[in-house]
Image (cartoon, rainbow over the protein chains, first blue to last red):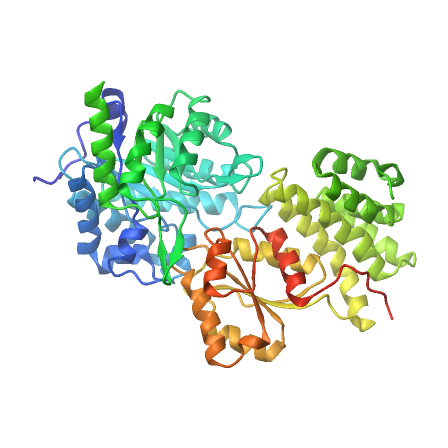
Length: 305
Length: 255
């Protein structure tokens, strides 16, 4: 398979216009943990130390049928990398994350630069400043863009102020499309982020902040994701992405196990699409087998229409 | 039985009516506030509203006016946090609001702590807190620490990436009966169990109670690893710590 040397001719938004549902990838962390990442190790450092593993991950997801993969750069902001004394290597590690994924992509395979939370709370809740967080996201965006990403996936966010800064950093710095997703928990009064944002409100506010695609990832199992996506769909016309965990982790024989099998998730994935998702993929606990099952389930239902 | 009209502070009354659904819980809170003077209720209102400057001024004024430090703490600050805890648990407020309340609590405690330690009053209990080895996340742990301190606990914060040996050394040094362990990553969750094993190997398991928490941590997981307590939220952390050291809800008195 020829690898793409150039940016894709059809970007994310064109693809979304043409095809009803795109399939994203599965988890990065879960994959890396089963491929040599030690507990407490820095995943982003592997872009430099184990490029073959990172390229292999992207290849496996594309081979499984992913239309897009995410770069190994979730914790690639200076705030996160500083914790591993890698604060000086933001540009390099993000660029390499993008280059590694792009080198495994087929010509029309999309690569989205993953941007996760800084791990700091903005003032006044915490000590991080708006300027500091914005600059950190700009730096990360620049590294990812230099490595050739086709867009960004800003994900697992809880605080609207933080995700809005990341969206702005991406939009101010590049022309590339931006996916923005938040992580919701199920509480006694419904779904909320840690900062109290509800799915419908998130869909509206993320679009307002400039996101081209809005969505939800992590936090809950697929049965709850159906409700979250439906709530988001009621509030926006933007394309919606759902990156779904393989259930809530349990421990078995001292090992962390994500209970939802590819089959279990594949049986539900159509409902996520019917609720309004335009891009579906996996989050924690999912792997290439989940992606294969999603592809089959979506294609089967597409053919049966 | 105390009635809501026994509470003079209108803001507190509104909060109770608006945010506390359970009748039993409402009665418990009303009872708590009915024993508080209007001044103490004002301090509690400042806590609930997250107004650290107000709490700072009112606490100072109450102490200067001769109210006992423990009275201010129990009937003002802790009473305020009791409502904050319920609102947080029931999704009426979220992390930013709780942090503002915790900051207000801290402003009040800054006046109270020196008086308590001068008069030889022991903290409610002593807790060692840390995020386990390999995990660098501390927002949840810090929230727990604020809640514990706000409830009168002395907390030793070991920070993030805490090895089993660091926990053991801290227990030896501070003689704390409770160790709280936090993790955000599923990959580092097993290090909670490993820490407990290290205490068993060091023949110190019987010296301490372990409580665990963190976004991916469940009660089943806590049971599986042999922890003594599990909390679903920073608020529960306080209740769990109290249960573990057997603190009764009786009021303490100054000697």
